[in-house]
Amino acid sequence: GIQVEQSPPDLILQEGANSTLRCNFSDSVNNLQWFHQNPWGQLINLFYIPSGTKQNGRLSATTVATERYSLLYISSSQTTDSGVYFCAVNAGNMLTFGGGTRLMVKP
Amino acid sequence: DTAVSQTPKYLVTQMGNDKSIKCEQNLGHDTMYWYKQDSKKFLKIMFSYNNKELIINETVPNRFSPKSPDKAHLNLHINSLELGDSAVYFCASSRAGSSGNTIYFGEGSWLTVV
Image 1: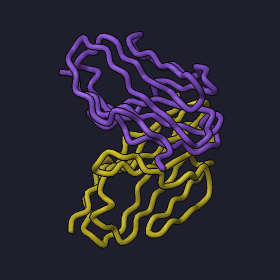
Image 2 (image 1 turned 45 degrees about the vertical axis):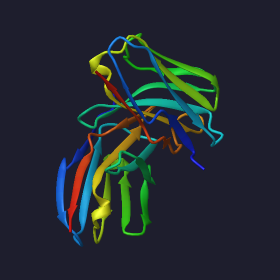
Image 3 (image 1 turned 180 degrees about the horizontal axis):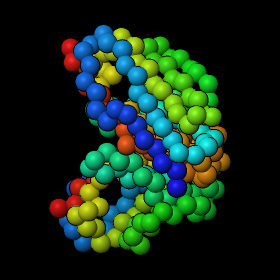
């Protein structure tokens, strides 16, 4: 099956800092989503982005499908950005998740 | 209004018991899923149903049996619970299949087997 790898696995930031999270996948995909799992466990949709670039406030994402990677940018990070960020890709009938990036933003 | 809702949110039960987790979506989606998140936060699909029919059944013990009475509901029944079943179970839905469609997740059901 398709392999999805995220980096870095853990990230600690000072409030106000910027960061880039990466997602590499091993095969062509027809769906890529970024999720944020907050400290209460909720999985929140951030982006549906099988290709191209999207922006939503302080977050933006870019997927280069031909090179099999996606990037999630967080600018001016806030403590509420803490949690786990997951990339998930679909190459058939199911969404396969990466292992996540655990982000802690310190005040 | 909650798009994908699961009940119960928390469940603590003894080994050997049988329990069910219910899931409902009001998005008009055709496909519903169950995912399991283990203690290391890894999310893995268990089942996928499209219009009440089983599409995906990953390597899951027979003790887990999904039931879809209609396309808006996908319940998960677990027999003879074991300690290793302790996890967070997420229900999700999308339009027909996850290919090219956004998947929406419920808030999770925290199952603890003691």
